[in-house]
Amino acid sequence: MALENDTRAPDFELANQFGEHIRLKDFQGKSAVALVFFPLAFSTTCTSELCELRDNLNLFRQSGVELIGISVDSKATLRAWAEQESYDFTLLADFWPHGAVAKEYGVFLDQKGFATRATFVIDQRGIIRASFITAPGQSRSIDEYRTALEQVLPANV
Image (tube, rainbow, N blue to C red; front, side, top):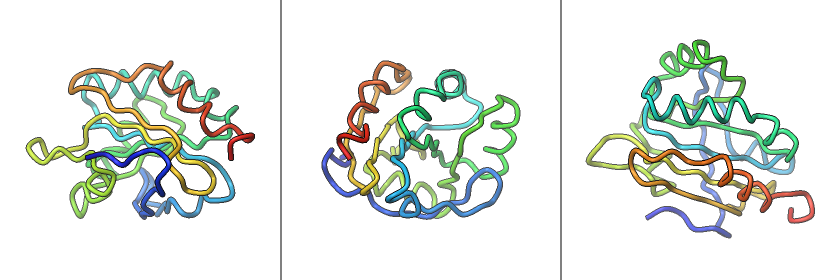
């Protein structure tokens, strides 16, 4: 079961597409974070979704929210995909232990071996303020992100 809104987001540390270690706790007091779990790099729906996020990156930046994608892919795979698609945001490898962060957030699909499409918007204090999950094969809409980002505007932090 996915984590609920108004609960503390579990801290984690994962390597990004460049091999740098990123820790969720390091964003506390600095910026809100949108964690975007997706099944697999290079897949059609995931590419379409993340390209839409790339094309709307200012929506996150204007809201003071750091956009971070997470999948079970390796950092090398994520780097190749980010370069191919010109993603200018962080992608994290939940590679090993396999899907550990997705499991902590309650969005790992054991029968498939990867995370479902789930988004958690976390405020500067580390509290989940908004979240949404789509059915398998269904993309998340940019309108869902707009609504979620409203939950972490500075007046609410």
